[in-house]
Image (tube, rainbow, N blue to C red):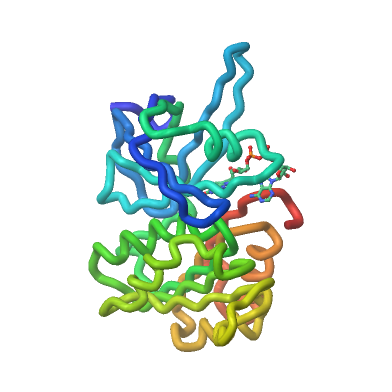
Length: 246
Ligand SMILES: Cc1cc2nc3c(=O)[nH]c(=O)nc-3n(C[C@H](O)[C@H](O)[C@H](O)COP(=O)(O)OP(=O)(O)OC[C@H]3O[C@@H](n4cnc5c(N)ncnc54)[C@H](O)[C@@H]3O)c2cc1C
């Protein structure tokens, strides 16, 4: 059995567009011990001259899908790895992967709830693993996802989130669209701030566990805001994607 830090060759079993700039890849792993929702994998690309780069990608799929693992990658135009994954990788290709990695930014049903999940952009990926697992598991604590996107076309997993929220026991999903809102939009239309956090936290109550993931600035706003609203810091877990200050 491979250990989490051993590299293995995963086969790309499926590729799916989520938005114009975000794509999901199903990786089939030859030797996978399973993961916990919120964990990530490392992916390594090596050129013929031996130059290699590694990047981390959260696991989007629920553990029940193992040994298939989905990752969801936003194309960063001047990036090294994400444009390669988008523009070059096709079904049947092999990629070096190791994992699962991380044990802190993880939610499983025994940890309980209520749960407040807060995402910015591709920060929704590890939270989606939690929501997908929650949909298959018991008990299902009251859960709300607050999700910030620039515009309606940039909402990752849009249809699946709608279906989940419409199901019995489904999570509440509150969107905020910070730059472009469709006509008749009734959701939030600004960056996440403390009054918005207060509104989504209030029905969940003071025992809530919170997970925030996305660009650093968003994660800091959320963590500081939730502490000011009375949530103990040990009930707030954070994961930062992308460069500092964004
Ligand atoms: C634990 C963890 C989990 C992650 N999970 C995911 C995931 O599920 N999906 C995902 O798409 N990414 C995820 N990331 C980010 C990912 O690891 C890469 O940083 C990202 O794909 C950019 O890599 P790149 O090689 O394309 O760009 P780089 O060559 O590293 O960067 C190129 C330029 O883009 C800027 N940049 C880098 N990342 C971002 C960003 N996220 N937003 C805006 N500008 C950026 C850099 O500052 C630089 O100027 C995760 C990061 C961590 C630490």
